[in-house]
Length: 529
Image (tube, rainbow, N blue to C red; front, side):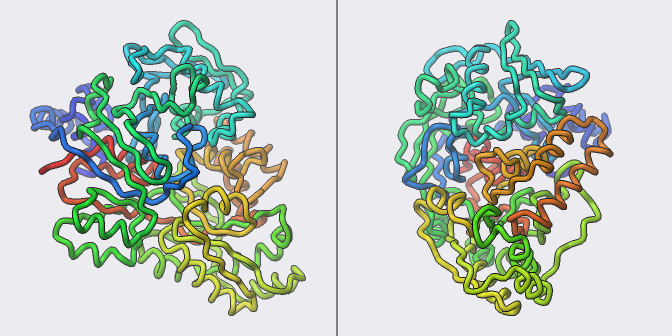
């Protein structure tokens, strides 16, 4: 039984999957009908996960500037906070990444995939006792598609031209067909709120398994169980406390001493040390996350593509994976897609460390003097060490890098997407279209490399509506080459998500969607005293 069928079995045990749903997914994963049926029976008869207790998480990523408005969620801290109290219309399968129902219980596209009809679940209550209606769904999506919303999902939803209710159904009309539309609605900003959050976007009232009890930006968030939760396969603990711990040493000490049950962002260099603790378990999950060095293509000196190429060839990717990730990851190739994505563009030559080519392009660029790189430990585990390592590899090409270490608090508002050269990370997205739409479309708010090309935008929109997968794959390959060879992205490595927990924590789901069990860690696990 693989990890995915174990996950399905746990869903059955918790009462979250009926026989028909389980058999369909298990057989799709390769089990025979007889084996799947036997596993369902055994799982249904198994003892349910334990309920109760107070779960404490120590997470990196919190800042004093954190907003409770889901449209403005930025960091891992708020990613996890939002998953506790809110639901999206659609979720993604932890192993395959396929779209699965949430507040939308089913959906149907038109033949050209330009119109999508979503059946909205009935009988679901918000934390304030109000029943979820189609009007709440319509208002939520309209707020996030409003050009004035500053929503992190704005670029993702840019192709929607009409949002309306049809009885109890949501009807989305697009400017062109999009076979990935359900997966776009899994974006973590798209929490369904009463009246779309227009009355009070900061109220943190949703339909999730927990109610927000208190919130101090960057410091702490506490939750109490939602007694009216519409799902039985989540929300096992009575209460949750998420504590902001941006210092890696403090997180490790808190877990080792039993002050918290779970920590994120474990530096691979500390894994062996943590493994020695008899009460600690390492949680490593491969996925779409990547650590990056980002240049603004529209700001000097990075508006010169020869300088950008010089800085790309000066990156020693193999050494980065070995020394920064401790082997917990794979080399990147300067575009944000790896082989976990459908229609991955195969056959693109791997860019290797080449000081001679770097020196050639650097001389051709005409640049002289040092290049300022800003970094912080909150950028990614080992972010400062990675910057220093890069500084050394650049020296062999005659490129001088000045590394400036920035404070963690405020990094995501004062440095990332503001300063022209910095380190950062991305958790990946459910589809290639969503990844490119979020960070590489010219109009995207989170276009953190300022990569703005009309021909790329045009190709992205064409690929989105192309139903022929062979043609669509070729389009994605062309897009990848554009970003790789002319963009401002240096992507040395795709990281495994390395976290750790107390052995009291049970039921952890390894999810390729994103870090921390795709943000759902606090709602999926239970405590075994």
